[in-house]
Length: 446
Image 1 (cartoon, rainbow, N blue to C red):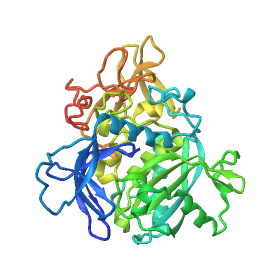
Image 2: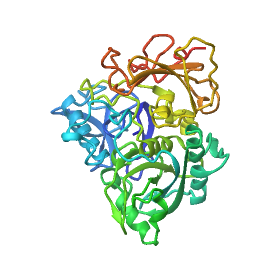
Image 3: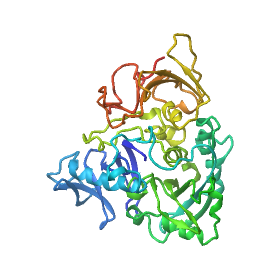
């Protein structure tokens, strides 16, 4: 799941050039505002974004397009009611996980119920070969070859177009060599409808059906011999459309063919030309798909307060760190999630007084301070502005409070309801919890 906190994005409108809007939220629930703060909603009948008004707490198109002045009587920063937002969130999250993910039909209060990770099949160690399908729409095609995408996903010492590395190298670094994740890239295939159609209709099954007409052997994507595809990704033509089913996401897909079935899949944008290629969001969604990492930010819904907070902010790939360096130099996966998934070469106990030296980029060594509770501990890591931390908001040592029974929905910092993983900000300003930013110079210890 990919979060935005008011970033300005160019969103398409019909056959036109599109419009710039501020986007808040993720694929479970999001809202859009004009640059001067008016709520906006896509009007399908006009194929344009229009000013939004409220009817019974729900956005309704005013029919006035954004190239005109805001209608009289519409106030800026309109927000849908808690009930409307909650209902939409519940519908979307119900599609994200397998049917047996919730016990008794209830959502777990802790987001990361499986010892800190999400429920579902994990493929987080060994050699994993994924299938990535390139998708064009009837009205939008990308001028990007399969070889160029294969280099982005699999290349050794890859640095094209400003990317820090390939997706494969990213996961080799994060896992200290324990996960070798590569992808076979196929396509592009052209879907039957225009792009806007797939905002409300998931493209996955149509894309797979078209691909299978080429005689694809699915056995190569089942590393465990369980007749389950380990990793399935779709990259669609054009810049990211932060709407509906085209918002980058990782969900569960119940689909089978010739004795093989899908499990989790991800969808991200491809861009229009090779200069648009970027690893950040692909890595983020792969973290959900392969490792069942939870998002380390606040959805603003699960804890019933409907207030967002930044969670780990830009300091972790699984918060908002996938956007750093224009999405091409994403943040590392934080020590907490690497520790949970077992990518551990050495654990150094900090409970004994001594001198310790944490080396930047040593992702397999963990500096841990244990507490009396086995579920709760602290991890320290070097987050200097080097390598994948080049665009870090802060620079220095970072200490995180970790509790597998916590939730990054709980920003209140009480003894019993606190973040699953929270950065102990050196300036004690709690700007991440207060959603004031995604990180700043006061967060880390020099």
